[in-house]
Length: 145
Image (cartoon, rainbow, N blue to C red):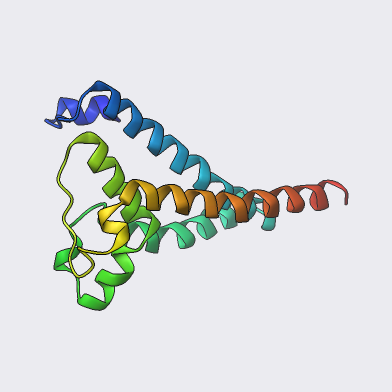
């Protein structure tokens, strides 16, 4: 993905180490979110239902974030949700690591917008602390039946 971005003009300006940290950060966020998918997958009976359920869980988080468009164009009520969203803080953290500019709207002076890396790590720890034990318990219960 990084190579495709580079081919179409993306140029990180923060140095090689920060770019590597950015990709590691993305990998860690993906690992945390994968546990949500594991729990959903263990809770349903078919792959189609699991796919639909994961889509329903991920769709609002992704599209109500700053991943695709700046939140400044959203209505103010949505800006609050979007700018405190785990996906938004992860995207802002990656932009910071890649040396790119972050633009926040109504929450421009909030702790998540000022410290997106730290807030994302907090979100990742919370997500993993909730979903890893739930997924393991669900797996044990399902496997023992």
